[in-house]
Image (cartoon, rainbow, N blue to C red; front, top):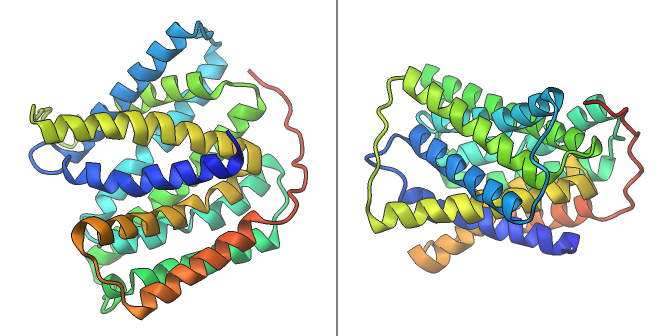
Length: 300
């Protein structure tokens, strides 16, 4: 699939996952639901690998990096975001998480030797500003109480962890680790770690055999995890972690557009202006020639 197709597909799927997540909340602890999601996604990818006879044997060193990808992309970042949303609105968390663009620009330069592209950085900052305007009603009147500061700390931590996960995934691709199998093992490691953290925090494993819970779980595992992460990480390998991260600005806007269709959300003029900034920033960040990245030495 072409880069534009991968980009649009990822934005549409991740923009729609909020519908599924709504049906996951309630009786089952959120961290347990995340563990279920990535366990199922890992099983789907392993089954696909067996069907396609893809190699599944890797060295301990390769498993280490796949586990690191799993902990940072499929576990710790989700835990941090859930903890942040205990104290902050989802809109503020979305704005903070969009800072992953800035993190990716500098971490990819530090760890991968990629050049810092000014147009990507400026485009990212425009997108973040636009997203802040879109969520302005949720951000107005924000007070920095002790709980809010704690929530912001968790949100920034989750963003930094996810950004580092992006860099690990890019590193794995440069070292010829296949995306499908890396995601399969990474999601399995991430699900196991999330389950252990949930149990350590006192969560009790439970399951709701309702149509809504099961259907949303299948959607989040199959499309939100297997398809979207596969598309996103493929895109990350092709255009770089900095440009790929702009998806974090676009998919919350897609989610709000879907809310307009299904929930009758009304847009204020500031939100319309914000979407305009997101579009301009997107065009700036994703256009222009991509300089060649410095090669990394192969490792196990």
